Length: 404
Image (cartoon, rainbow, N blue to C red; front, side):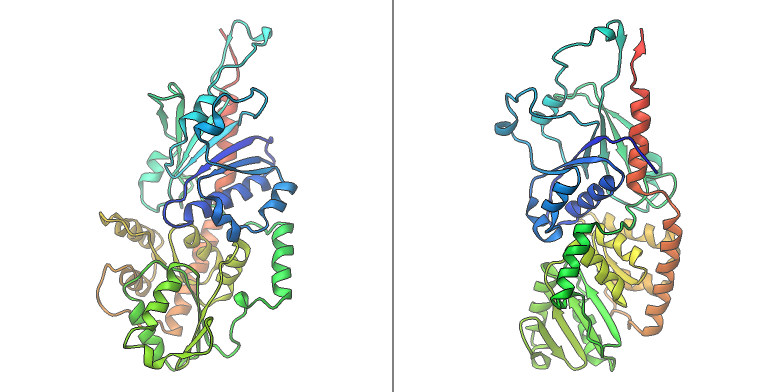
């Protein structure tokens, strides 16, 4: 599908993990793929060092710019020719766009076109609040609802709520995207140097990837694999998963079983544990697709696990008020997940304190088939980036000058 080229300003604030940045970076790539131009404003851009190590090449090849979070020092008294106004501004996940930026965006034109005298028009840019993903019912009710801005530099504007989702009545999902030339070159270089991140033990009968917060059931999972007579290769992601597994292996129960081959590899009976480095998005997606079972967390890796079409166990972002249980159950029930998988989800997320069920090859096969069916169903829906472009095109048509 072809769209007129527009400039999009995407605002992203990193909370305590990198899921927000991951979604915004993927959205940027999707928009570029649709012929759009993107300026990505990030308060903590350090995550792109490993998430998109080739981004500078992408900036040179595509019309993408990564910019620091606007502040008073950088944005006060700007030169009138120093920037270009966007056609669309995306406020990702409720981050508040700085007033200094909005004040600049809402400045009236320096000179009026005489041909427009006697005409009136709506603002020339569209403001979208991109919300978090949920399989609950409320995204269908609230998708594309307007919200008048009552104060601040953009008073009088309208902010539009845009809800990703799993039904045609929502904004849809970011689908799989073919790697760019920079991605392909980068990853071929890594493979050519025998990077171990994407290489599995050929003797392993069960290949598992772990990307989690701090699930209370991890001890039970390691205990299960320690007793299992199946050669298993567990790749552990960097960050919180790495720290949790390392500390668990130091416990009295497991320490006597651990054979330390290196900092990267630990062995326990027939279980090989490998601590891998940070992965960029194409590598991350490839690893999900090459495993037998993926433990994922948050939002971005949750959807990537679906597109990988492999069995997965999702750890939802925990919230103090417990609403994440409602969100998790809504997803499982909407798509009629196997009861055995629902049980594992509940235990893995700490909603049940019973022992983690045995992750047998037969159950993993059932879960894989369910994920494949789910991916096929969701793939028939429009892409989130395409729906955003459609919405912007509609707003632009409705904002054309009207004769008074």
